Length: 115
Image (cartoon, rainbow, N blue to C red; front, side):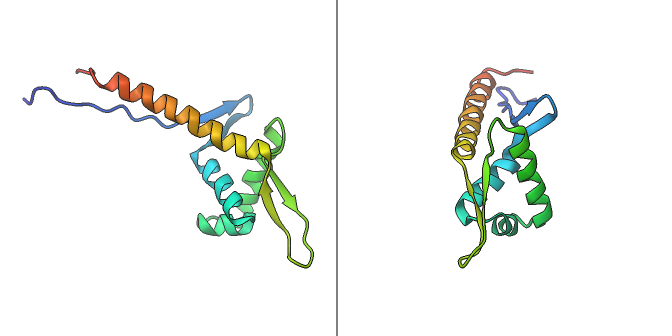
């Protein structure tokens, strides 16, 4: 039997509120893609996701957040689109900060893990 076996702790993070799961890595990627492409349609395409699903996720996040994370831009000569609000930018940053803290904790805890 091998001695000094090393174990790693893997953690998946999501944020919940009264109605259940609110924000996880998939929604963060959607927000990032909206920020990058300026469009829910193009963000959905980048993720190989149906527009309808992406739109529903955005609507749900906007309703459940303290303030909207994504703002629709009205169409016109250049067409419409979407952009992240300050709250949307903060949500991404906060999620990654939390994720790093949790992963750092898990890594620290796994150093002396024995079974």
